Image (cartoon, rainbow, N blue to C red):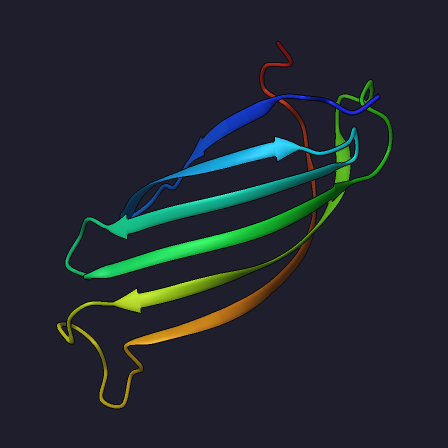
Length: 104
């Protein structure tokens, strides 16, 4: 049975933002995020990520694989090095181990 729940996250560090995710099945989640720089960098970041969880939902710690992409948009050239692009995208791939803080 697929989990039919949404979840929220946050972007930390020198950015503030929001992530919204949805479990499509017990082992697959899709997330979209948006963040903006709050320090001296004038940057906006948009992300789309798919997460594949391994193991079962009852496992307290589960390994996962993550595939996605980020799009970076710098509104100003402040603090950028010479020849730095004002906008670009990056593909991301990661593996890790995670758990749910609150399963309710």
